[in-house]
Image (cartoon, rainbow, N blue to C red; front, side):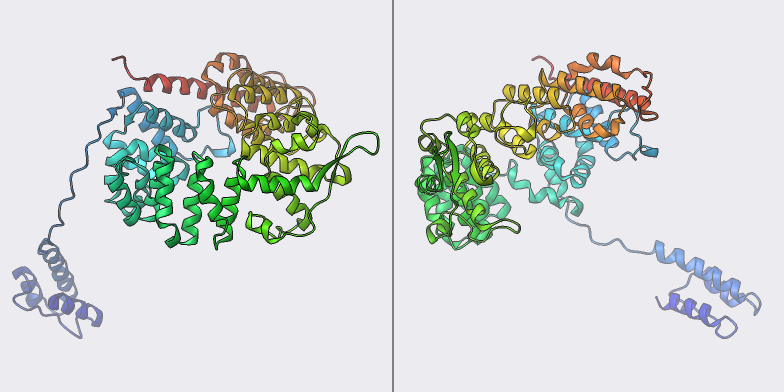
Length: 544
């Protein structure tokens, strides 16, 4: 370093002011010779020659540092390997994930590989495959970039993916979620479960209580009770939420105790869970309060529902989860009424209204503009209690215009109500809705339908898209539905769509160029469905 500093100093000051000299032990013979033999005019060149020689010497003379300990060998993954065709497909999908977007804002007719990757990962995990070792870096990069891919991507990566993630700080997110994988002890191993519950990280404990709850609800509840008093409020809230899976009357005693928790959020969650148990004591208390506010009036010749909302939120209501202060923009009395009604068991209304069915109750007129608040509360109760009869009553006929329906005009509420119905009934209802009202209001409803869309839902979507094309609308007005169709239509629908890929004559009032865009969109849809079919074939395990 002294020799190098000498050269730098001479270069900064100038060789005419300070001629460089190198210590004998630090300079090569050639460098010393160049400096000693240089005249006044050759000193700058000699300085540069010496610096070049010394640079090589410094680089070549470095001693190797101490070696790091070798990492532990990667664990073995016992799952079956991917078929060769599926292995190549995964590489293409991972490469297409990072491909640049098409220029000009047009997607073109090629399938969007980034949108097909989640389906491919889900199908590969269903068949029990493991990711090829060579794809693990790209798979972890994809999971890092898209949080929606992480569960499926990490499942496919398996223990080797977690091992690799431990060697790269960019993939540390995978280690945070490792507790949801194979590292959890068996639910029947009481000692290991107790050890992890007492000593594990928060994410590990959440994953553990969820896993144990799936296998043995009573054991999970006992585990939760064992440390409940010492947990932080935010942790108690997360652990309490795990009781949603397998919720039963056996949980009522614990949830009743949680109603006295010092955290308002914990109390509210406990009350919500108890209201999902129609036979609970809280449900009975809420039924008494709700039915005292809602009654039937027959004085004017016809039956009418009348509402007298609560005038105060007393201590008992607050203990049972009713928040005294409403959200911004909500009136106090309507807020309290809604919380009472959506927490009451729906069975109490049949007795309150003279044995009428859910359809008959929802069809009754409601006085003083309380219908919206009352029906919205019944919608929340139907979803929470998974009551199909009330959901059908509040949905009404799909052919009825939403604004004039019997229960709710909110598409968000309708989507939630549909989620309580069987898959086939849900698909039929949405298909009839599309046939009656088109696609413009059906996007939220399509999102709750089981994939792939069965008939008649798939046919209704295709017919509606065909009608929109004939009307001359721009296809990007339906881009959301088109994107859903690419992911959700059955691949068997591809032949039905072939005729729609042709470029047709545009009507006089059509948007300029719409026909070309529609043709391109349908070509992309057909090619995507065919690619999905091919992916399924590639992932099908060979016969034993």
